[in-house]
Image (cartoon, rainbow, N blue to C red; front, side, top):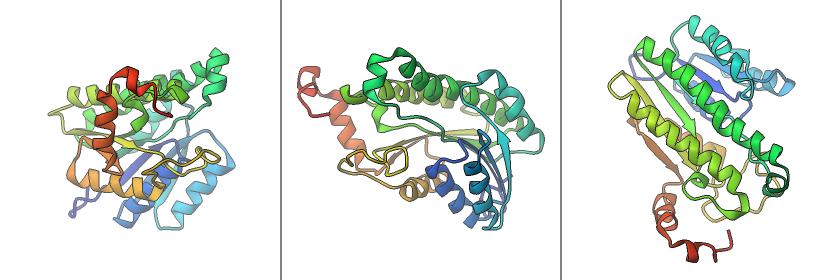
Length: 251
């Protein structure tokens, strides 16, 4: 449960090595979050992330979690909720993929879709059900502005995020009035390991900036958060741009 100041006491991160998620965890720990679960594939990186958060004073546990192994989600995540209520679930896993391989190797495209969409649907529903049972909590889902309109340079990734975004909004509507808050976060280009080597675009942002927006969105109980906020009108224009004109853009 949240403390007397409205700060979440517990956090579950799906995608425990995500730079954005870890930046958000650091901010929440600074606001008195005391218990953090990092769910991810067992690795030195996951243990290192847990150690960094423990050094900030939080009780941190790791739990084996594989987005692609949807059959294991109920058991793995059920064990977390069995230990006590979770105030915030941050769904932060995903893969970018490469448009070249995705266009020439269908298996590569399927992996992107299964990770970013199918895995997220499975894990999201498992967590949503537990949050509904406890009667409170927030489910925060990292989407992307790429889901607003798929670009030809990486339409497989964009389409997977479009599906995730629509799913999350629908889930939020389904949970309205239950005490569960669902928030979609739509960052633009974020400078992380996943985007290393890619040319940054205008309005590029950082994990720390996205984390700050997540924290603010949780305080306000926002339903949709854009990072940076200036992307909202930009994407509104692109979303409604005639297709013949959109094709001509260097995207």
